[in-house]
Image (cartoon, rainbow, N blue to C red):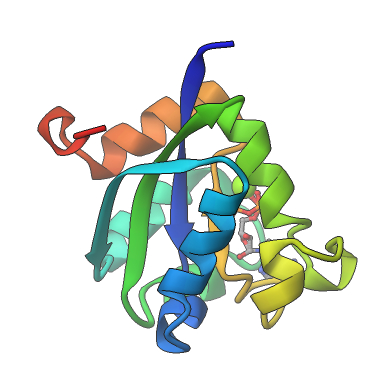
Length: 140
Ligand code: ATP
Ligand code: MG
């Protein structure tokens, strides 16, 4: 099967606790390859734009505040069935519901500060990659 791509964010709760490497290791151990990566401070406008689908949800304001509370690491991951492989290793949104061995079970602090984002479809992955990366930053 051909390799596909997905988009990942290591969230501020994880960068704050110096877990960038530990989280990336779990992604790599799940068969995903980091083909682009950069540490950025998101602006409020960027965070609001990225989470636009959640604008009407009650937690939107807090989520945006959290996502700009410190640096994040945005990454493009490549591998077989990358969207699903990443979602599987991330675990459930709420760490209390996440399976043993997942990133969120291992590291997440709460349903909001849950250490990682991962695209939920190939279509969203392509859009999210474009939101943060230029083509010449995808070096393979
Ligand atoms: P992500 O999109 O970050 O990969 P997800 O797809 O598992 O996570 P979504 O339902 O898309 O979860 O929610 C997006 C993010 O919003 C969650 O990762 C979490 O940080 C936050 N969030 C979701 N539900 C809640 C909630 N009930 N209270 C506070 N924050 C929440
Ligand atoms: Mg989501």
